[in-house]
Image (cartoon, rainbow, N blue to C red; front, side, top):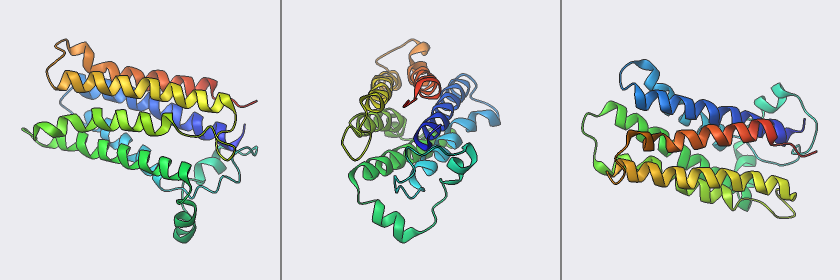
Length: 201
């Protein structure tokens, strides 16, 4: 598999883990396991923020371990240099939104009566992440193949409505407790789609 395919399989599996841990956290508001959801969000955000994105190995056949190790930055100056590219800015913006979501969900777990706006951070960041990555690529320099772009549209098609539904539930506009699982279901669906079908050949 290529570097790009393996990266998206990793993120797909991470998305499945996020969705399942979110359902668990929202159904069991006691115990240590409820912290898995925000901690996984923080790890996901960090894994998108840290890498130096040169793009040089995107379509090279590489190993799973080599791809995993590419998360670690090797030079901050190179990180800054490549961070000026538009698609890298989109990646890093999504990373900051995911990190913000993780921090907000931890706040909700730690505080008995958090400010009402904190409950809307996750829905808002979900919508914004979907938009940022949904319009991502589709150029001659990044994600030139239509099939690559379509996978990112699917991501947006899950995160945007999932975030909106969760926001409406947390605002009291939707009453059934099932609605709060909409984002989690979207994460699992997106993750399975990426893990099983993000193939470029």
